[in-house]
Image 1: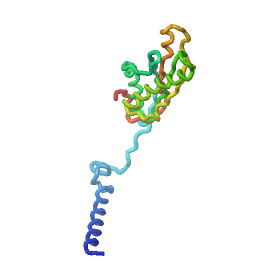
Image 2 (image 1 turned 90 degrees about the horizontal axis):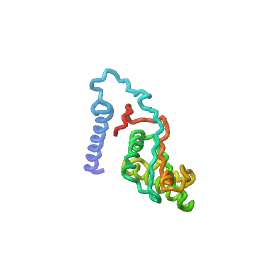
Image 3 (image 1 turned 135 degrees about the vertical axis):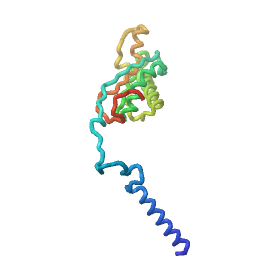
Image 4 (image 1 turned 90 degrees about the vertical axis):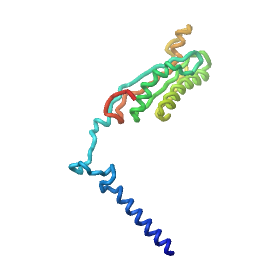
Amino acid sequence: MTCFNKRFSILTSLILSSYMLVGCGNGSDSVTSNAGKQSNTPIVPNAQILLTELPEMKQVVYFENNSFELDPNDQLLLDPLAVRLRQHPDSFLIVVGHSDNSGNEEEDIVLSYERAFSVAIYISSVFGIAEERIQLVAAGSSERLSTGTSEAERQQNHRVEILSPKAIVRTLSATQDQSY
């Protein structure tokens, strides 16, 4: 071993050993600082603060005939559900798309899926919610609310139902404040 390599090795050892001492519970870092503490008892949060019961939330968004475009006013209806997902990482949504029977069965399924997907992509992209937390269901025309023939009656079937089920979840906040 050359003289340079020995010096470098010794210098590296000294630097590493002093580096390890700085953050190893000697009170010099903010994580293990003992300044102002009377005891070394760890602080354990109250388990009731970490869990919260969420009531069920539902919302229905209506679409124009043969459309899956989400209206800006309907986006405002979805915001409280998205905020709930942001505040409670264990919560999730079930998004069920519907259509009337104006097309064939395959077209109705595709349209109902596109409607549900437009709701899910809005919540996911605008609020940063993981897509895995949003379950999509394409019901097609199988669950029509109205079998009437007028446009007003058929409009009831052009919908997406969004459900956030009642649950007990971990929370990031000890308060139930829904502002985000």
